[in-house]
Image (cartoon, rainbow, N blue to C red):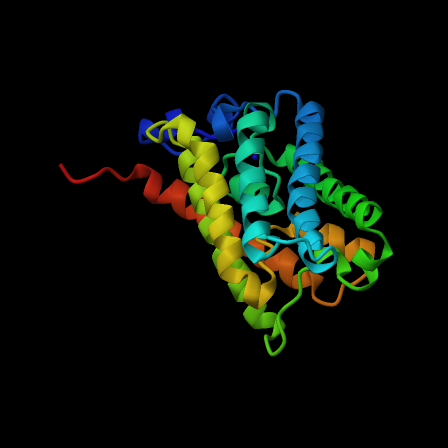
Length: 260
C-alpha cells in the first residue's frame, strides 16, 4: 500500500498474475520489486501515523492541554496520513494498514509474497509508536489512559463494534483504492483524499469504537498495555471491510464510466 493493474483494467481484461506484476501500485508506486525497503517505509510510516494520533490523544486525556480534544486527534490522524502518502506513497504505496494490504492482495492488486513483510512492518511500527508515546507522557499515559487503546464504548457489544469498524474501513479503503490506483483520478489529490477519508471515519466512529480503522493502529496500544480483551474486533472488522471495498472497486466500480 507485483501491484495494481490499471492498464489491464482499462483494456477490459481480467487481472492476471503477469499483468499485476507490471502495473502501478498505490500513488504510482511499484511495490514488489524491493520488498524489504518498501517494508521499511511501511514500518516508518505506520510508526509516524500511530504516534501522531495517539500522542495527540494523550495530550488531550493526560496532558489536559488547551485546545486538545477529539477534533485535534482526528486532524492529527488525517493530516499525518496526507503527509505520509505524499512522502512515502511512491516508495511502498503507503498502505500503513493491514486492511489495505490484504484488500489489495485479495483483489489481485498486490503480491501475496509481500503481504507478511508489510503486515509485520505495520504492526511493528505501531508497537514502537506506543512505546514512544509511553516514554513521552510517562506511566500515567499507560496506566490511566491506556495509550489511547481502542475499545468499544460502554454498552456497545463486540459484534456491533466489529460491524462499525468494518463499515468505516470499507469507506477508507474504497477511497484509497479509487484515488490512488485509477489513472482517471487526479494524482495530486490522492494523498489529501486519503487523509480526509481517514479523518471522517475516525470522527464518525470514535464515540462507538474509538475509530481504529486500522488493525495496526489498534495493535500497538493493545499490546503495550496488554489490554487484549477486544483486540480481535479491531483485527477482523477492518480486514473484512477493507477486502470488500477493494474487491468492489476492482470488480465493479473501476470499470464504470459516467453516462454520455
